[in-house]
Amino acid sequence: MSSDTPGFELPLRLLLAFRTLIDELHTELARQGYPDLRPNHGFVMQAIGTRGTTAVDLGRTLGVSKQAAGKTIETLERAGYVERTRDDYDTRRKIVRLTPRGVEALDRSARIFDELRARWAAELGEDRLRALESDLRRMTPANMWRLDTPGWFAGL
Amino acid sequence: MSSDTPGFELPLRLLLAFRTLIDELHTELARQGYPDLRPNHGFVMQAIGTRGTTAVDLGRTLGVSKQAAGKTIETLERAGYVERTRDDYDTRRKIVRLTPRGVEALDRSARIFDELRARWAAELGEDRLRALESDLRRMTPANMWRLDTPGWFAGL
DNA sequence: TTAAGATAGGCAACTACGTTGTCTATATAG
DNA sequence: CTATATAGACAACGTAGTTGCCTATCTTAA
Image (cartoon, rainbow over the protein chains, first blue to last red):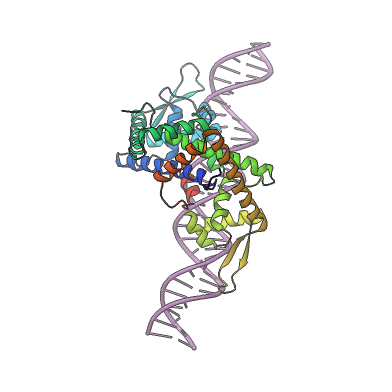
């Protein structure tokens, strides 16, 4: 019992599905007042989290150098999504935290993703969607929080 | 009936699954003697196809400028995967064709993707995998051959 | 048939985002 | 107290994209 589906369709569909979801997210984010957010920023802000982080740590999480992380932070700082404060207990460190606007953007992203998932559920049925998610979970590393994907793709 | 799965898991799993497959492909390609091939190159060579193309056309297909396409072609040419020949009927044009090594690399990629799919089928069962593919097909644009993804991701 | 416009490709300058190397300031361990 | 490690910033560079411009060639129309 062999398949008539060529193997290369699977990765292509996975990427296409991802891309479609992300495009829809950012279309909606732009509509809601965040037109300057890029796909990368979501990863980065997610990695910063509500507890804050430092450039070095962020670099480690994202799988890039601390310098690259620093530049990204600077971009997000200029855009008003994060802010840097000094650490009183270690004056070398600067803690990067999400601003209220940053938290807001992350909240909205989460809500939009939920809506997009609901759209999939409406189209495929909740059961099929659960099966799909379960299958993907089974075929991917347990730790979903490898957020080092941007750098991975950029590095051709 | 609401889901306990947060919406953001779906895109993350899709990307992670894609990434995993592509990583496995290139690990295997490297093992088979093509260590210099990068994820992008697969898209580009696929877009060039067996019939050849030109820089302008390739740029259109990939969704990048003709200059960018030209640079990519140059890289692949230096690596020995494509070659440029003049067009006798229009001496402005240079036809880009896959070299035998390029065709070989594409063939091997196809075979490796088939093997990877077979591994998924062994793990999930052919039925579940077919359902997954079918669902993805349903949720993504009909035209799978939008190969303009590299540029999309690069443009943050 | 010749002039005007469109098309193909190459070059240069620039941007965005990553890299490594180096430097200073500050903590921490022996 | 000194040696080492760590945090962050700065500079130089690599890669892959962009736009603008130039030349060569093909096509169309007067």
